[in-house]
Image 1 (cartoon, protein in one colour):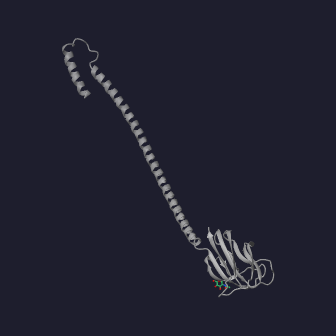
Image 2 (image 1 turned 45 degrees about the vertical axis):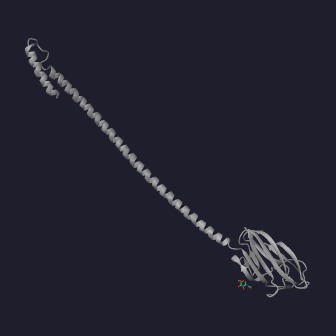
Length: 249
Ligand SMILES: *[C@@H]1O[C@H](CO)[C@@H](O)[C@H](O)[C@H]1NC(C)=O
């Protein structure tokens, strides 16, 4: 474009100067061309600078692009990590819930066992002439939840913490005395003196105990009136008996 006008200007100039300024010697015949050349060189130089700047900008853009790319990859990695962590946590929670459910099931099972009645009732002494210090063993079991009563040793082993009530019934022979009562873990808990009446009556004694699991309850003949003692019993008229029940947890 500039070159085109340049030629036009040169032509005009030559025409004009030919007519009016022919006599005056011009400084340079190619003044415009020189100026044009200088301008062209400047423009070329500027173009070169622009090119460099453009290249720099492109380079910077490229760097930004690379950084962005890196950031995207980093973010992706981080997201993967978060997803992994979340998955792990979900798995952990699932396991915790599973354990919880298992515990609940176990507790329910335990509750089912412990909420079943705790009671026993055994009748008929194995030995109707017990010596002092002997455990009164009742052999015939009428009920015995959780098998807490042992009819060989005469021992009730507490299956569950709580408040219990126990009862004993013996029927001493006429005019015979027997001192007997309850023992918890070898310690006297309740004692009673039984004396045989003319009707060979039976006598009952009860006791309440606060007990913890594993404690042992027995009936004993305690010292006193150390004559041979006879106890009466018969299926038809006199049941000797040891029984007990959990009344409160
Ligand atoms: C003890 O109790 C069991 C179960 O009720 C019974 O089979 C057994 O005969 C009893 N033992 C005696 C010595 O009576």
